[in-house]
Length: 187
Image (cartoon, rainbow, N blue to C red):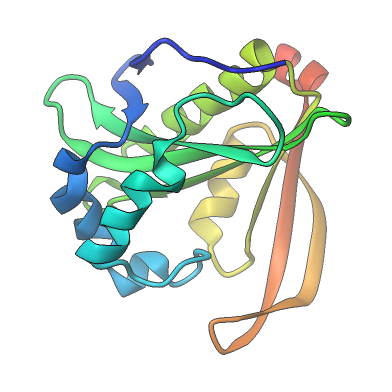
């Protein structure tokens, strides 16, 4: 099992590709916004933090073993504009489990880009990596993210009340999941 996508990964309107230093300003526009980061597992980022990520976690362009993550920029094919990023985590080789995450620039909310990009991640995880199960975990207050998981055909499996001390308060976590056979039927 391994995943080595040919880049860019194309969808109807998007190109998913590794992030580059040239994306710094576009990333700052949303990853530096406290409202965007409110329910996400990171604080608003500055130029230094983003620079460190290019050499660190964002440098992974293939998944060759569990406990790796591949973050891809979401670019509009028509304009080349970076509108967000998505991540595929490989959580377990033995159990063939993965997880997806997504963050979009709010200037581009409501256009279906996050759904289209996340659907491409499910395809990579199930069809190319051979995962059996993919989850998405999110803060219950992030209703837009929960709606996206449902649009993807993921089902809510858990509501973990006050599961984590998160950014100074208790957070209730929702866990959504999809199995490979459900992906085959849904796709």
